[in-house]
Image (cartoon, rainbow, N blue to C red):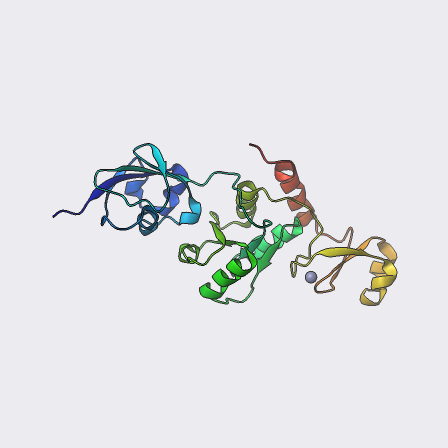
Length: 245
Ligand SMILES: [Zn+2]
């Protein structure tokens, strides 16, 4: 008996994951009659974190659907902005995304990051335990079942990565409220509180200070590099308002 064959097409945003031959319109794929559509989509290279609506012969199905011979299946990319239910929106970034982590923190977005490679199982467990959306460019990592939620980062350029994540999730932006080194929240402190931690010049020329509630690093206004100011201004101009519907 011949194996069942389906016709499957992918939305343009998913083209990056599939071979060129599958990017233009639908193409044939052999299935086994027992695997779920979710499994079939993953086996064709597309992480389920990136998949939105699934349709069989024009009607919506879940990833648990078992494709049968002759079905015409369309796989669409996840909608933007994407809502993550069930927890405050916060992120966990893999070891390759340190620059993105610091930029998200600069904007006040909760972005945990492990600078050491703790391994895929530990990262996935961390995501589940803390209910964090795992951001990664590693498709294998995004396939791990124990993830709370995940998202593929489409670019390897930090500027584009930031726009990708902000546009996709539309997190609330609160610039200069989070420690870029450790992700802790900043609290206002008086000059007297932190005088013992600072050099005389800094104390004389600055009046407004904040301190990380986790690592105690001290921040003061006006100390930021122009480039950081520009990153914040750009992000606020594009993503600082309410998300479009
Ligand atoms: Zn800190």
